Length: 137
Image 1 (cartoon, one colour):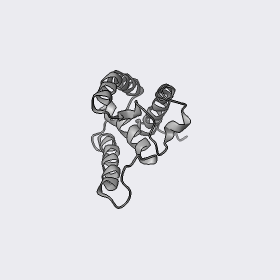
Image 2 (image 1 turned 180 degrees about the horizontal axis):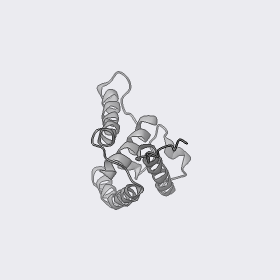
Image 3 (image 1 turned 90 degrees about the vertical axis):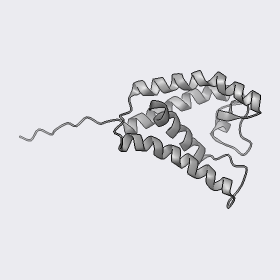
Image 4 (image 1 turned 180 degrees about the vertical axis):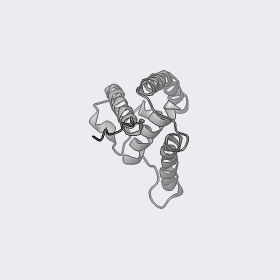
């Protein structure tokens, strides 16, 4: 659940803010990109708002570990299938947040900090707030 909330919402928000698209409006792939990423965001929010999942800071740390554990697998898939999942082979050509994070491969290290900050912000926004009763005298 942690992965869906933190990596899912965080990654999909980044994708929607700086989309990497091969096809422009009104092509089907244009719409497909946005509704699939919106679906990822809504899935994470569904678990928080409907299923009462409560994100924790420990979940942020577990997600960071999971993302880093997946890196070698994703790098191998990128090499095998000539892909660029998680932009681990190169930056997107049409510009993105990665342009502000340094040259390849150093921006991958900067992405660690960005992911941690984004996951922490998601945790702060979605965590259960303590219900303190006001004492009226």
